[in-house]
Length: 377
Image (tube, rainbow, N blue to C red; front, side):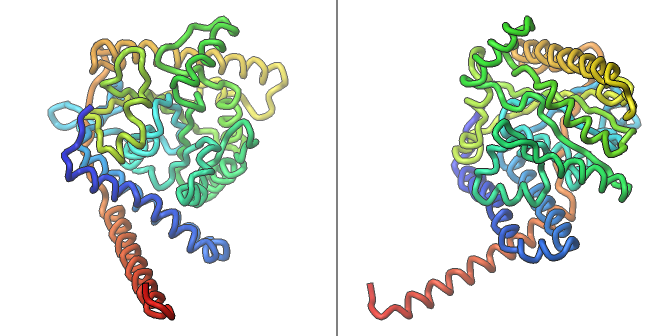
């Protein structure tokens, strides 16, 4: 990791405030959004694009590059045969990713979504603890991100509604799910070790064991609306500069990254596709018998555990080499070119204009109120 130049710290901090400003605007426009679905959809799309541009600017300011690893079918190619981009995602895709830090989806997987061109439609299943974040929680609600947690039974109805709406409108549907539910740190490490010991499973040094039941239920909810052509993109996140025995959250927290300006030179992401027939939770008919459903659930447990075993091997190799993620003999590598689209830049500039106007009105109001006081301070 490297501390950014001094001028970058206030710039990064100011950009970090943009999501809070977007959340404030969502809150102020809520009365209009509740009355009109057109206004609601416009606010959702506009704020997502403004956020996308903000994240691009944050990443460029911090000089972080994103390296993609994957098999040859993941990439498009130039005339010379070298990878020069990413192939489009299948129309309906569930992204299953390991969870290293909050930056996974707040920054890097969001940028991956913009590169794929699906950030406008992407739904992220987030933890219920994010409901407690002031203003930013308003943004997540406006984006219809489902909140999942132990103390709060699934607000997954929005997931089924959005999947059904995407089918009816013939729009792409993309959902990002973190099967671990939490990231690995000093609190979750002992729980993961105990779970592995009780279940007779291998212990992980770089991962938390996935919650197979919750992930299975989420996939069944999506498939339950009749979405048959559903693919899975298996994602593995890896951060360099994490010493053995420590956790990514200790070095790549939101506070260190956005407030202190400490940035990682590179972030590595491995991609692998699975079609419907490869994933047990997706290849069973709706009218399957109880025994078929039970066998399917058991097969999915094994399938997901195998994916996490593979991730553990990849992350161990990555920690040893610092650059190899996946199979170096067959996988290829591409450094993403980070460029926001015109619509994202336009949405961001409109937000800045609205924010500056709001600040000017607030300051004038404060000056007027101060002058109206019956006494002078």
